[in-house]
Image (cartoon, rainbow, N blue to C red):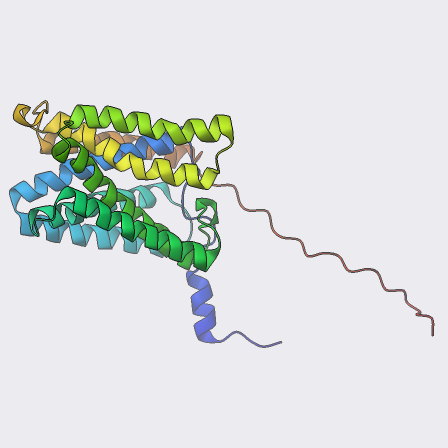
Length: 277
């Protein structure tokens, strides 16, 4: 029997010991939508303070949060949701950067990020054979997962701005529209047996424009069809609510995926002690 090399042992020691994402529950969707709203409000607040400083802060926080997430070897609620929150902030900054700095129209940025998401899905599916979040038990699958999450945040940000600004629906109407759209995969899965992986990612993409539209409605001035509570205030309130909910699931531990059943090799046929000659 060959002895594993030092490099091989080191690689194994970095692999996850269990699934690195939470079980999908109602609380998962509540926290996810709140992080999208928080990310939208926080990003807009940072840009107003100083766009360069906001970009640097968002990038550093994003890198550190993902570094921590990849360092742990199983799902930890605080670490996971911190990474999601920082992806929300950075993904919003990335999407807004195309429009604000490069003057790319919202329809252009929406198409651009849709193509990126499709490419990530294709590469993930070709490499791993599945897009199920219940399969995030290796470092490579985790990498694909977070690339997908980042792409969905950027796409959702661009799509929300497209409906609210370019199509002139306003933030409240956009939020209500995305609320209706996100119910479609839920009902299709529940009543008509829609593929659960398709239903999940369909809903996941829509959480971004849904949460961001309501956050903008609360924070933006009246002239932009908002309630004018301010980006900083909305970001702060959303952050407190997220912290409370994440603290709850961290203590309750009811969002941890059950371990996958080990695959039992087929039993070989018994061999008699004396074979006939």
